[in-house]
Length: 488
Image (cartoon, rainbow, N blue to C red; front, side, top):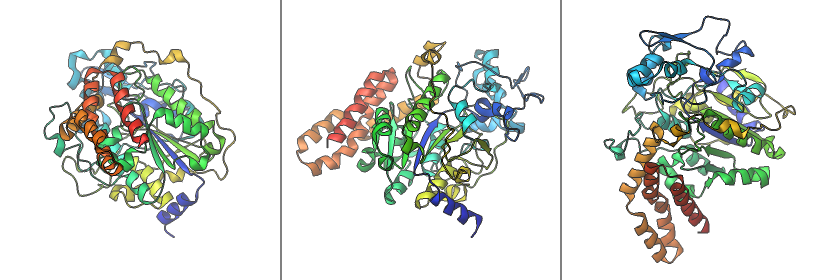
């Protein structure tokens, strides 16, 4: 038996029955977890006893130093062209790229934050997870680029040749570019194999950008986040989804996806809430792997140069996809993993590889086929009994120093969601008209044919909400459709 076959057999036969993915945003490994080299000498992080690594803005050098700043006032650029600039000369271009884009508006303090990192145990939830479970110190984003294509890789093993994100509602040829994600997804493969899954979301599930997710059978598996906490509290383990995706809140003052400029402690509370919910159900906890990982680095410094990668398919319209992106924070959390560092090379498709092996799923592209499975980190033969029972996050730490920054719609992800909502309502038409058609149909078969499109037409409401940054509108729009779907 080859090592690859042996790992596939191990993945299929381990005691993990449920995989929960919490995919956060825009932080580098060095920034969030590099401090744990204090504990693990084999971790490829930040050695406080060695000369500090530096980047220069052309005049001044900025060192890797600890910070207690909970908000980054400016969102560093992280589109592919910027990431490639950041990686030049052995990862020496992070500060330089930041200054080239923000110039004199970027203060000395802002420039320093590109290089700074959080000291150990400053992050109330992530650092407790890292202390008690398995840190993956060579988990790279799947490409040197922004949020959406990296998320597409996490859900399907490819970005269909695209790395650009919409930069507003006037982005050229929207319907021929990033919104045309027709590829087979993890969710499709789970459906084929008869495996259960759900997506739990706060405001707007960005996974709906994948075309297949907007089909009726898949829309019915989307639930507001309250349902996750109900399911963990009340379902028996065998009734809990085999795969769960948790989508954080992407906009508004309660945004908790860790995307600058929001208070990073809101992301910490989300990690704690998810962990506490699973941990409180003992039967579920013993058979669950919680994966906390970030989609990409967000323009923040990391010292490891990304290695070459296998292109996922023939699509190379905007990039060759032959190199991984910057390292991202990743922690595997389960009573079946140890307190340790796993240094195997991973990217987002490594999680796909594990689930393909585990549940005998159909293929998800060449990158996934070539990836190392994260199953190598499932090391415990029996569930550990020494795991943290609960994480408490003080309400006071989630209050931002700069609440004004949290009311702005200024991240590339928020702007892209605006564009997506615009695309939906332009492509699919007027929501009110469709609602009238559905109401007039009068019987299930006609309703069934229309209800999948109904969710798409909510783009009319979503777009207006995102443009106005009005969270009440998005809640009303999404709640009404989800409730309608459940009634049917």
